[in-house]
Amino acid sequence: MKISEKEVLHIAKLARLELTDEEVETFAHQMGDILTYMDKLNEVDTTDVEPLSHVHDMVNRLREDKAEPSISREDALKNAPETDGTFFKVPRVIKE
Amino acid sequence: MTISEFLERVQNAEPLNAFISVDETDIREQAKEQRKGMLGGMYVAIKDNISVLNQPLSCASHILENFVSPYDATAVKKLKYAGAIIAGKTNMDEFAMGSSSEYSHYGPVKNAINPEYVAGGSSGGSAVAVAAGIVDAALGSDTGGSVRQPASYNGILGMKPTYGRVSRYGLVAFASSLDQIGIMSKTVTDSARILEIIAGEDARDATTVPEPVPPFSQNLESQAGDWKIGLPEEYFTEGLSTSVRQAVDTQVATLKDAGATIVPISLPHTEFAIAIYYIITSAEASSNLARYDGVRYGFRHESDDLLEMYNRTRAGGFGTEVKRRIMLGTYVLSSGYYDAYYDKAQRVRRLLQSDFSNAFQSVDAIITPTTPTTAFKRGEKMDDPLAMYLNDIYTVSVNLAGLPAMSLPVGTDEDGLPIGLQIIAPAFKEETIFKIGTLIERLKS
Image (cartoon, rainbow over all chains, first blue to last red; front, side, top):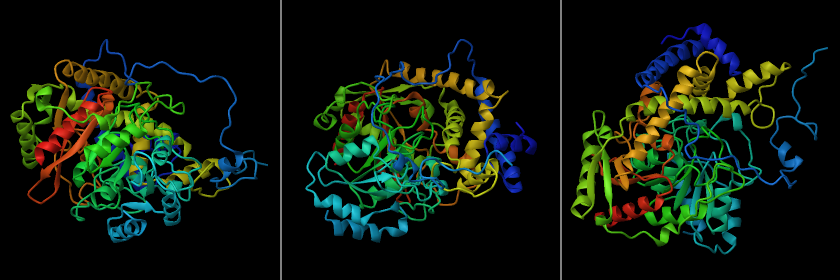
């Protein structure tokens, strides 16, 4: 399995990661090696095998639909890089 | 142990780099109250991906620099309630991704027995804090061996409970279908006591199970003749070092002499475990780590443009291994590759889980080595991700199948480095592990 630098850049865009030229080159090479190793799974016949997404047989359990106290606004904003005291602040999205 | 003794130990062990933060004022406050309860006065360290109210939580990542937890994880809350003193936050591989505790923003953890060697990972700081005698016990997290492997490398016990046994509320998510909080300790009794306290259903984690929690620590005795133990042939093949093999063989022979029935078994999909594991964990991690975007907490790279702010925050905030796994996870989930990798891995995961259910039709427990070798030298595998991944070969299957398992120390190799033996039991049968563990401790002494 070979991964091109173009593919790495596409994936990085999806993952919201700005990579250096050096990282692009290294990841192309390393991801290729790792995915080649993963291809090993093709040796296994999985016709009629259901995918396993959860280890126990579980059903969704919902709590009662009742309002309960939650984290306070003050606590929720405490770790934020920038707020106006009520909301998180981000760089302007709509340009003038 | 008094507070000053504890603080002195922290200071003496500083070169091992086991802790990211120790809050002396907070510990003095905690110790002021008379600590009543089952864990009264016990010093317990917490891996730095588990929330402790008003304490920093970094996951050993730059991206969570200056983050302070606004609440206690359920497991931590229960420890406090049982009288334990929360002793500090331990160093680890960034976001629990690694097998050596070298991928940390705060520098590598060093092995407690020989500092030239790795501590193991990702809960390396917790393992070293216990092994070096700084604390009585510690919590770690185990997604593919992150409690058991460092326990093995440092000569202590590492217990990974059944998936869903301990609430993950307050544990930073890495791979949600596998993550589980685990216990590092020096004795089986301590491990059993702590699990008894922290286990149980929690309304704040929908994956916890409503199974009753037995009084594990009141029920540790058994006879070797009670047990039928399986040895999987696939775990005793090439790649397993002679010294580890001999130590495990010797322990198994001792159990057999004492009356246990030992039978060979087969777990035929073992060779696919690492491939399944790294596809599923990378996929889940790429999704879980999408939340680190510089908006709500942690480090932000300032920019006038929102997209550039995201891209540069994540580029500057994450270390190389975390980026590599986000990339890999995004790739296997991306359009055109989902079926070939993620879906395929989930299907083979079911076959691997069936291997274990088939084996447990005829045995009570399975014994394997915890790792193929003892600890490796620091720096040795830093730049070879695949070699680092293969180190988890005997531990990842347990997480993929959702089972409980424990690593126990069973001697040392020719360089004096500790060797670990792993006991695996069916889901919710932690009791079996504690009993066989107690037998092994008794047979040793």
